[in-house]
Length: 64
Image (cartoon, rainbow, N blue to C red):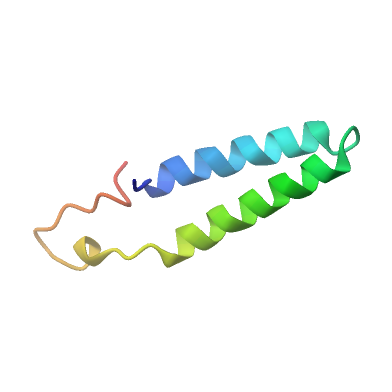
């Protein structure tokens, strides 16, 4: 499964929102959200995108 850049940003935003809502009630769960957010940012950086460099390529990762 592969997410494009916009989808990852939506997931990160949702995780940050829920983390902010739960942080005061359950600190352990908030820490788990922090770990997921960190993993998503790593995934975002590790994505390879060969189609971005090809003139006729259609980039799936950075698609709008």
